[in-house]
Every structure is written in C-alpha cells, then in structure tokens.
Length: 172
Length: 375
Image (cartoon, rainbow over all chains, first blue to last red; front, side, top):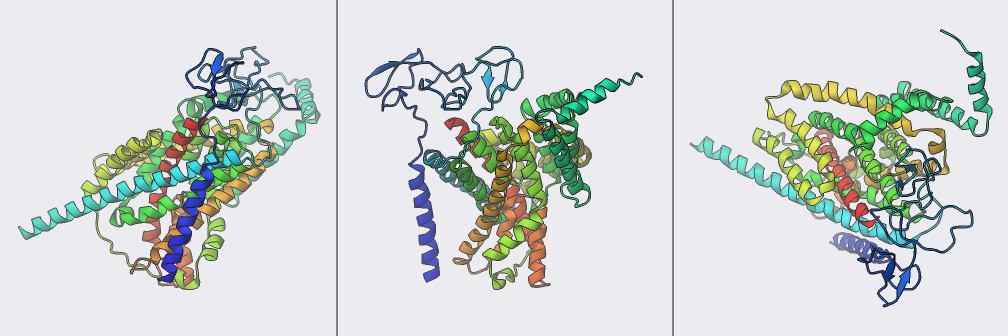
C-alpha cells in the first residue's frame, strides 16, 4: 500500500512540476520590441498599438504570411542578418536573386539557393523555450493517452459486441 | 568519347581547395554507412542507399546532385509523398491481432512516446529553435517515415542528420534497449510470466479497427491524419480479405520500391556543408536520449500498473512500445527467455510494439499541430 501511495505521489509531483515549468513559456504572445507590453495582434500596417496603450512603428517581417514586427536593435556581434522572432524568416535578401520575400529557412524559395542558415543553433540555456516545450510535453502526453483511451474503449466495446453475437448464435 | 584530363585535375584540385576535405569526410561517412549496412546488417535497406548517396552528392561538381534534389522535391518536399506511400506498405505488413486481443497493451505504446517530448525539452533547453527541437525529438518515434514527415513539414535544417540518427538507432535497438531495461527492472520482474489466451479476433473487428482509428486520430490530430490514414489504408487492404494481390504488392513491391528511392533521396541532404556541423553530433546524442526515455517510460508504466493489478505484467514489454517494429518486440522476447527459458513474451511484446507504431504516428501529429501553432 505504501508503495502505491508513494508511486502516485511521485507521479503527481512530476506532472505538477512539468506544468509549473510550462508556465515559463512565452506562448504565442508577441512582445513589443520597443516597450514592455505585448502587441495587439490585429494591427498589421507597420504602426502597432501595444497593450500598454502606446503606438510604435517598426519594420515588419518580409514573410507575407507572418508580418510580425522585427526588433530594430542591431544584429548580433557577428553581423548575422536579422531573423523574425515569430516565424524565423531571414530579413536578408537572397544573394542570388535579391528576393527578400521568398526567403524562408535556409533556402530561397525563389531561386532555390541556400541563403543563410535559419535559426542556426547556438548553445544557450533558454528557460523560456524549455517552458514552451514543457507545455507541449504536457499536452502531447495527455493527447496521446486520450486518443489511446478512446481507441481502447472502442476495441473493448467491439470485442464485447462480437462475443455476445457469437454467443447468441451458439445458443440458437 | 573524349577524355578531358583537365576536368580530372580541376575536380581533384577542388578536393584540396578550401573546405574540400569535407567532401572526403562525407565519403568516409558514406563508406561507414555502407559498411554498417553490409557487414553488420544494420537497416541495410536504408543505410546502404543513404551511404552511397552521401558519396554521390559529395563528388566535386556532382552531376547527380540535381537529379537527387529533384527526387527530393517530388518525393519528400512536396507533401512528403515517399514516407506516406511507404506507410501503405508498412500498414499492409502489420498484424494488429495481438493488440486487438488485449487492447490495454496500447497504454504502453502511448507511454513509450515520452522520450519524444522529453527530448523536445532537452533540445530546446540547449538552444535548438522549436521547429528543429521538435524534428530532433521525433527521432524518438523510432519510425523513419514519421521522422521524415515531421522534420520536413516543420522545415528543419537538420533533416539529414535526423534521418541518419533515426535509422541508426532503429538498427541499434538490440544494443540500446537491453541495458536500459535491465537497469529499470529486477531479475524477479523480468521473470514474470504472462498468459496468452490466443483468442481469435473477428474479421469485423479487424476491418473496423483501421477505419475507426483513422477517424479518431483525424478528429483529434488532423495533422497526423495523412500518416495514420495511409498506414491504416495499408492495413485495411491486408485485412479486408478480398485484395490479397494488392496487399502482397504493398508489402513487397511497393515498400521495396519506395525504400530504394527514399534512402538515396535523403542523401541529397547529406552534403558536406549541411551535414558536417557540431549540431549533427548533438542530434545523434539527443536521438539516444529519445530512445532511452522511450524505453524507460514504457517500462516504468508497466511497473506502475503492477502496483495496482493482481495479474502482474512483465515490465519489459513496456519497452516494446518504442515502435521499432518488430525489432523491439524480439529484443524483449529474447530478454525474457534469457531470464527464464519458458517465459514466452513474444505475442505480448508484439502487441505493444504495433501499438507503439500507432502511438508514434499520433505523437508525430500532435507534435506537428502544437509546434506549428507556436512558430
């Protein structure tokens, strides 16, 4: 009995700690690059209002499907091009075709040539990203067990029905 | 035919030019993959074409690159055609009967996907962005087509490394899993015998299973419906009983044909500049993390269930939820026999193994839908 209680407590603690960790995630909010607030998502004209009531203007992502604001602070010290923090699209033009809007990821969609490596991996401990992943962990495991549960219930029900039909046929 | 010596010198000179050594390293990597495929028989159907393709695309001014790139565009880049068609063949190969006789085994398949999500957290923590972290994590699905599908849909820049890691670890299941299983279980637990009823499943159940699973998964995780749909379509062809010829073709000809193209197509992403990065080694390391935690979670769920059930479960079968079908089931069966030569776990572990196949596809779909919403 003690073992059972202990196992349940450990499991509960694990679940609670992962949920707590997931609250560190930044989720889908778009932070304003100019102040502490979050941007109001519907604004897409280059002039944005944040939830602190201030208006700002800044560059927006070249990716037509994204159009999120780009932080105008200088790029990193290596001089790498800027990336949209929302979709990861490079804001640099493709060196081969000079088409900025079609760059997504490492290859230019217009000419197919490799432009810059998108989201190049940098060793850093990112607690915000961990929070987002922890949220996906919680949702993912929950989702799998729910779907699995539904499938198990279906199979059990089907097996029972088929067995009853077989028995009733035998009785006849 | 004119033989132009200057071309030879030009290409040799390119090998000695800046970064040319990377091509030679890729030839060695290709050679190692071919060696593992032929000598060690590790997933030869995929490692051999990948190894040869790695050499092919890393020749100076390789004329094959364009052809293979074109294959990649048709077969993988546009709607992940190759992995999906391969799933029809895999579906036709799988017999879900051991699972249908004891559906509770599916819980282990679900638990053994924990490694995917754990690796997602680990990858994010060390600095991969979310789409790359998710693509790396899916190595834990222990399922090549699912890994390709997810990595390519998310547009990961590390597709080749992910593929190599996924297929290598699938081949290494007999090496990777036993130590983890032994570490998580006691000798007494490994000796637990499980009865197998051998109850027959009705044809109606076998036919309804693929249809209902497709509908359920389609409603819950629409992003996974292509994968699960093609897998279950293959299984329906097998179970319906009136398409034996198609089932046979899907299992053999279709699966083999796609496998040939898939291996060499993936090699298009094994160019030196893309593959030779420190991140590749980290991805291979994270793949091991994914497999380890998949195995660990499956075993631990069985141990947890044993605390509450009268009929004890051999916790080793939980490890078969990893989906590497049928390798993982065989590993568990063999470990059972090592401890007790009358302990036959094959049918139970096969049941868990096929449930892992379904669960890994569901996990892939859920991962896709969550990550796509966040990036």
